[in-house]
Image (cartoon, rainbow, N blue to C red):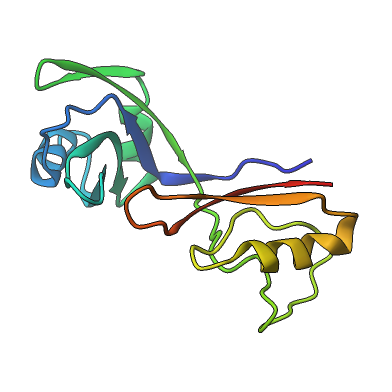
Length: 151
C-alpha cells in the first residue's frame, strides 16, 4: 500500500475563477505569508484557466494559516484549499523497446510518444495482453499519458 506524501509548503486550490492570473493569486495569498511561486493550470490550446492551481510559500507556518479554513472567496467565487500532494514524476516510466528498462512493477504513467506495440511488449512481461489502447488528444493525436491493457 502506497502512502501519500504532502508538500508542507504548498497548497492546492480548487474552484479558481477561469479568468484569474498568477499575480492576483500571489497578492491574495500573500496575507498568509511569503509566496514563492504560483501556478494556474491552463488549457494548452486556449490558455484558459482549468479552475485549479497551486501556491507555494516559504514556510510551513503560512500553509498552516491558510488551512485554518477550507474555503475562501476570491473574485466572488468560493475556492477550496488543501495541502498539495507531492508530485510524482510519471514521464518515461514505461520502458520502450529502445531503452528496455527492467522494472518489476507496472509504471504509473505513459510517455506521450509511446506506441501500442511498445505498450503491449512491456505488459507482456506481466501476462498475456489481449489488446492495448492509448488515449490520444483529438487535435494532435499525441498520447495523453493514459492507456489501458487487457490481460
